[in-house]
Length: 135
Image (tube, rainbow, N blue to C red; front, side, top):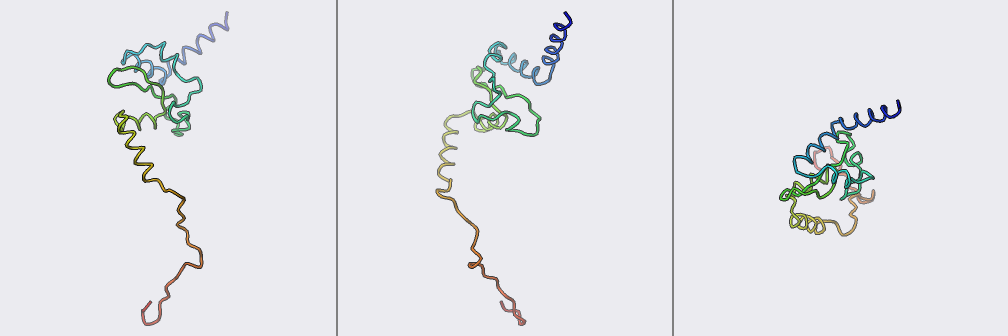
């Protein structure tokens, strides 16, 4: 009998944690059923874009759960993302066209081959200053 009450207390504490309450209240505000959130939340706690956990993506430990990503037009649940990927989509206006343009830009500006800026010691020339001030 005592074990059941201890288990119940542990779950109650989890349900009262700030990350849990904020996720639940956000889902409720969007009209997303809590059962759908629980069912679709990744079991491995990894972002559905980059595959990192929230702690790997934002190692400050400030955010302990993935963000609930939703369509801003319909309010439907799209998935769960780390804060960096969620912010990235938001900054691009959740626009597939802008995201494709960003990908095109990055691919076009990426170096084709590694560039070495280091000079070999034989290529270094050090100007010397003469007594009359000329180099």
